[in-house]
Amino acid sequence: MGRLDFDPKGGMLMNVESSTRVEKIEKCPECTSEHISKDYGRGELICEKCGLVIDDYYIDEGPEWRAFDSDQSENRARTGSPMNFMIHDKGLSTQISWTNQDAYGRTIPHKNRGQIYRVRKWHRRIRISNATERNLSSALRELDVLSSKLGLPRSIRESAAMIYRQAVEKNLIRGRSIEIVIAASLYAACRKCNVPRTLTEIAQAADTDEKQIGRAYRFLSRELTLKLMPTKPEEYIRRFCSKLELDRNVIARGEDIIDQANNLGLTSGKGPTGVAAAAIYISSIMEGKPRTQRAIAEVAGVTEVTIRNRYKEMAEEMGIDIAIK
Image (spheres, rainbow, N blue to C red):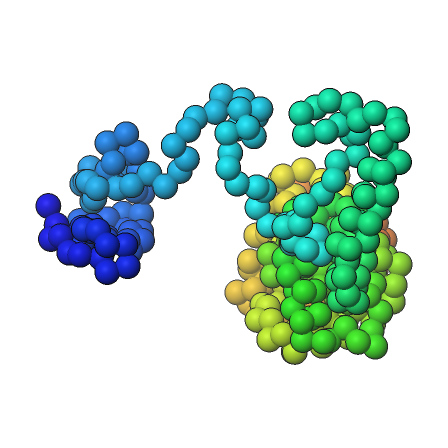
């Protein structure tokens, strides 16, 4: 039992020892294992490897109620949805439903629907109160459309939205096209989350100039101090092979070739897409499922000359015979 002290703010006794156990435990103090499970029934924090009870006063921070379907979960919850960075106001404002039903689920009479329509219209207008919110509203819609074209997950979209919001806060958007900055933010988010997309792919989806997107990306990276590591050739292998309809054997052989090239220093100063395309060209021939240089070049967004130069360097240095079987 911990020592009891008087809390001057709340005017009540508090357990000092228990209140100090708030630090996050990530490793077992006995065996340094990171496999730690939480038993909320017993209120214990247990190491799965050695069985040590790390804490016997662990508090369940979840809700005190249970729900067995989505309707019960929605009715019993006392909080709203989490913040959504894909909406200009982060989803914290209220919305008036278009279902023409009141709070009790009853249908709104026809004589009152005109009034409700005007309320909805003005409510939609006042949600955007200034030029900054108007810019965010337009840009985030454009970001959602561009992300859908590229088939990017929600995590990438929210990361790109955060980068664009930071640019707006620092007034970096003035004098630049929204489409260009959105494309640059999306490219930076892909780099940040290790889901690589080439500038050519993003430029084609956004229907804008590739050089302008690259220039805007470098500007955002410098002004927002985005610490992004260069993309690696092996990150492109699986996606390019999927578009070329090549199996896992070609993927594994291509990744091995890139590993050998990295060890020999052949990828230093070379474009990652060109190296990945050359590795796919070599591995497809070695696995008996050759693809032409033109087909690989169209998928990778590089020229056939680049593939030819890269694969000759790699084959010569690694002693690979790539005669077509």
